[in-house]
Image (cartoon, one colour):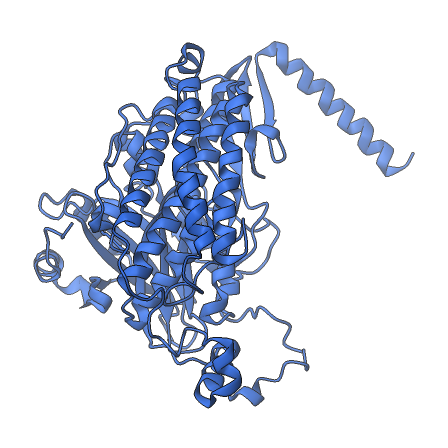
Length: 410
Length: 169
């Protein structure tokens, strides 16, 4: 008998014995690693008594790509592509957060116009992030219709990103110092169309679910967490706000001129799936408000800061101008001198406080770069949130927490 | 929103409580950074959490740094703490040696530190005394080294096609 056959018999025996425990009351269920309900690759081993979850254990790291190690080898402008792949549902926020971290380190002043442009892009990214999350909550409760409509709108946002930087999902948008180019007339047209059409579609989606009896029955009370526990677990972002804590980095430590805009930070009360859904819904509306204000108040000026040592010069200058050629070479080869120092910069990402802890020793690459990844931090509360609930509620809790595998595993 | 606390007031208050345990205090980029005696950090973080005035009760981030050149203090553990009520941030550092990279866990104070400490263990080999489940988290269990230590180079050191001499490195 070959070892394979022996193993098979052995496996059959374990399978038989696991069948026994179903009647005996406690069974083990694998939710993931590749399960449609996990929306990403991570595993949950659940101990279940019938439908009821008694406890669970998580395994993560399936798509770990060693970003922090990679970053120690890359010049500063090449790290932007890494940040894309953290929370890939809202890449521009990560990109711009990283640019701002470097700008903080080198002490760069960014023109008001570039800041407002960044606000518009970041709020669009937030909308697309929240759209995915809320649409998927709908799907997990069995309502696929809203998803299909919202994903059309997400496509529109990706079209806008494409107008700005040429890419859609992993955008690698902007530079240290601002943007590659000003918003094109095509972008402005498409943004106008988006701001005109999106609220209608979004309100329709809202009427589908928000006060839908079935949806409310399914989501209220599913996967709740109290404000105290959420704080102890270092929750941030919509998940913390759903529990009733009005912490938002955009308000507490405004960056990119967020203090110029009038918007509301929505909070929930119970921290359950329904509250998380509603907080994200309201944040989408507030993001639209911010974009409209930014467009209306868009200042004149440049879309980039005057940072010749960090910002690639225009190509026509590179070919004809000695100085531009030197800067081009130095930036591309990563030979730009960087001050030694230690900064922590955070932005309000789609899922919470996205932080960059950067230690520079003056070398061409960071000495150490740590990403504070909100997903990684709050996902550890998941077992506590689902213990005692049913499996279907656990699926809903997972999708409403918006755990993005890229950000989870770095 | 401006902070209700100033760096000076906070460091004064901490020093009045823990005088000699605070080894240094500085404010790079206006971010209060204190270095404290290793294995005093648990006591200090607990006090910061409970103090009526400071209320630095939120753990933002926790991570390790490897400084192979600093003999006797090769590893730093960096805690980013925050007071949401006062809108104030504090960075707290401790250094441990590579012979004995062991620090006290703060999971009993901040539940969220659980995975952050596991990650730090996973990548730097810093062990956290009293941690409920200190096993690797992102890397594979059978891995026998700690990849974020500086001695592990990202690229194959035997490669000859990339010669850094030409770029003055």
